[in-house]
Length: 150
Image (cartoon, rainbow, N blue to C red; front, side, top):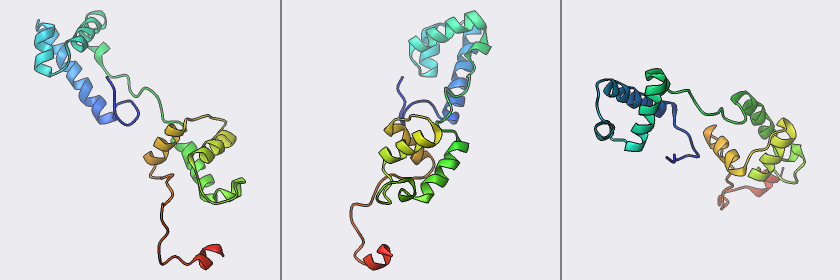
């Protein structure tokens, strides 16, 4: 199964999927067939077969969610440090202008945290925290270039 937004389920969706698996476990205990369970719960027969094997081996506890697959990189604590660095501006980190690009942020993360993230991963992380790496395509007509230069 493929998920939008770069993988994984949201915590709410994980709870929903676990609820479906627990309902399937109750139906297995009642003697329902895999086909009936799949039809009633509106899931694939293959998923029900996989759940049934797990239920036979480990019981209903084996069908519980084990939590998120991984934590966001960098963690929220490290992102707060990154946010401070981004607020200093690109010039403070050695670039000729104040424009933050994904490549520059990737370089900053590598220098500061000794981690390597993909450009799409950085973009997702920024969006998750309310940042945008996009630069406006047009300038405002009322822009005062003299005030911006000083």
